[in-house]
Amino acid sequence: GYVPHAVTESVGRGWYMLGFVCSKRVLGLGAPESQTQGVGAMGRRVLCGCAGGGLAWLVVYPFDVLRNRLMWDWKREKYKGLCDCLRQSLHSDGLAGLYRGISYSLVRALPVAAVTLPTYDCVLKALEA
Image 1 (cartoon, rainbow, N blue to C red):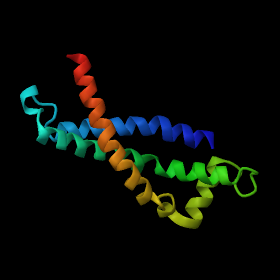
Image 2 (cartoon, rainbow, N blue to C red; image 1 turned 45 degrees about the vertical axis):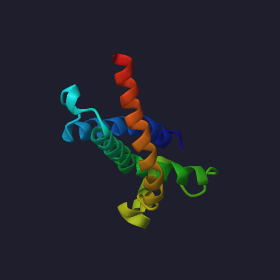
Image 3 (cartoon, helix red, strand yellow; image 1 turned 90 degrees about the vertical axis):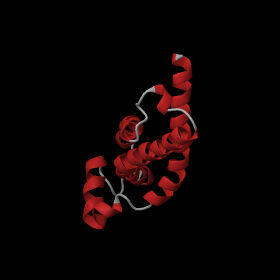
Image 4 (spheres, one colour; image 1 turned 120 degrees about the horizontal axis):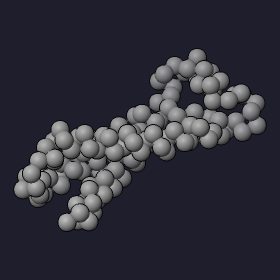
């Protein structure tokens, strides 16, 4: 389960920040300072945080599912390794099986990202000032 865990933690963080930064640009938060202040701008940052968190989980959730399946099969009775786990999972459940249960993760992750990423953004701006 180490490889899927490493992918979830490393690649997931990249997608987390990529989704946040790109959505900020789309919503005009890369504009001059006068346009990025106030309640409206903070609301847009919160929305961008949700976008970043949601995107990250959409990308890494299949790896999280595989990691959990491999951890449950710690005696290696069902799966020979990551590739075998992926092959069997796709054969038995299809691609949708790798996303089963994602709604619970999103319900938890979106509010966390909605607070964490805008806070990161505000602290970074304060440190740069």
